[in-house]
Image (cartoon, rainbow, N blue to C red; front, top):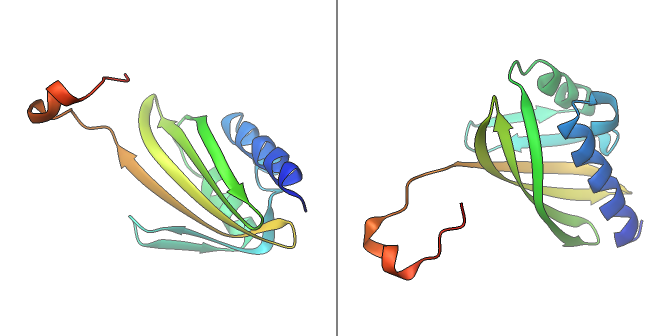
Amino acid sequence: MDDRTVRAALERHWQASDASDFEVEHEIYREDAVLDYPQSGERIRGRRNIQESRRAQPNTKRFTVRRMIGGGDLWITEFVLSYDGVPSYTVSIMEFREGLVAHETQYFADRFDPSPSRAHLVERTS
């Protein structure tokens, strides 16, 4: 699978994620895919379990992709995942095998107030 095809598959995946289209969202995963959430210490094995874990999530979710970078079998997506309107800044690292995601790791970071000690050095983005 070439990089253009992978990028198109990722765009379809994130659009489906934002639309809560659980069938299309999970087409990108191998049957034996593994999803890790290091901050909660969770590992989910298998596409069906990954899909069901997301379907069971009770919050309203919205996905805003900020950027996707990668090539070959390694792709990184930086996005904002909002649960019930509260943003969490997220990075997804996807490792592909035979054209499908074999392993994904997602890292989450919550917003925090800027430090007054560096106010004179920064440009506010939001």
